[in-house]
Length: 108
Image 1 (spheres, rainbow, N blue to C red):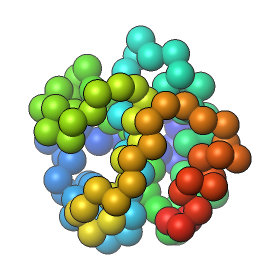
Image 2 (image 1 turned 90 degrees about the horizontal axis):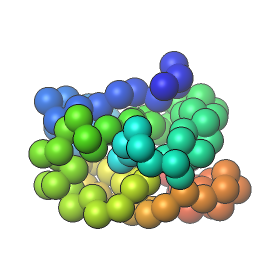
Image 3 (image 1 turned 30 degrees about the vertical axis):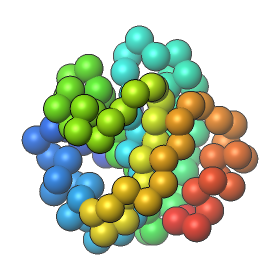
């Protein structure tokens, strides 16, 4: 994990994501997930470049099964975008940076 992204857990999800004052992109991932590892450096770049507008959070589903189940995460990686505590967008699967930026443009 890099410095630009924030680690979120079952214990901190409500405070860090649902009560955040700016949009939060949550990367639901796991150690064993190859595509998750490909996505990670892209998310670091997005987090660093857009820190003023959005928070990018990493959520390890193996270590935090409660929230992953509650948010109905079925496949990895899944990126959920939350604004004012509500899920407003879900992106499933790894994508190249340009495609990801296009999908997230309205929040960046």
